[in-house]
Amino acid sequence: MDFDFITYEVADRTATITLDRPEALNALSPEMIRELRTAYDAAEADDDVWTLLVTANGRAFCTGADVGEIPEDGRVVYEEPYLSTFPQWEAPQEGTPPFRTMTKPIVVAVQGICCGAGLDWVTTGDIVICSDQATFFDPHVSIGLVSAREVVRLARALPTHIAMRMALMGKHERMPAQRAYELGLVSEVVEHDRLLERAREIAATVNRNAPLAVRGTRLAIRRGLDLPMYEAEVLAEAMRERVVRTDDAKEGPTAFMEKREPRWTCR
Image 1: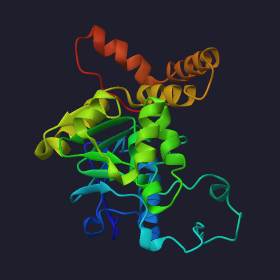
Image 2: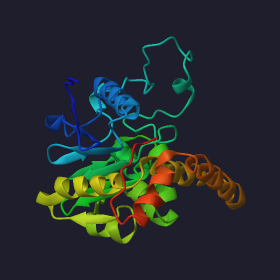
Image 3: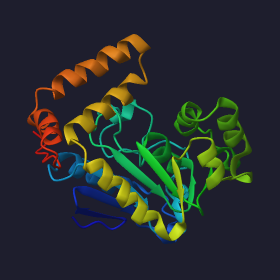
């Protein structure tokens, strides 16, 4: 597929989506958002894709919404008639992957500045790593805007007082990569020049596992986060019961007993 503001490629069962508007620090324009949604849908629908990898070109991963594209009244403009589609009734998602509805895991590799709506990939990605040159902050209050879903998500990923500090300090304080790792915002800090290589290694490792089991596990965790513990346990067991009926669930133990690598068919 050809895009103007992102690149999309599939190799080794991984779809790599690269934000590619470096001259604008990968700020999200409406056109870029449309391209991202097309890419997410393509990856989710492609049987040859088992894992998504999101990264970026340039010195910024993503600096949030393109301020020059924000209407004077601050309202989000939709192509469809007002309130005629479900997304218009939800909080604007901008570049956020459809993490609540998709099944395939998302690896995120942050190589530079990550702020505003760029933080959405950090808080909704499944495995997030970053370069030692990455920095994180939330500039909304510094430009007169309320930090909304971005900081609400941050407050679920970080201690409340840390998320509050980031939100209220705005652009005047940045969290370095090592601090993000210490707080659990990212799971690994990598030398800058090795970031993409390491992200691909992680995606390849995920892809060595049974893909339907990976998806069921991901859904159990994601959906369970919004439930009380007992309901989350029941949901997870329901996912297990569905996957246990698949060919891959039989292949795994067979390969183990035969002392060979399993041959997953995603069936």
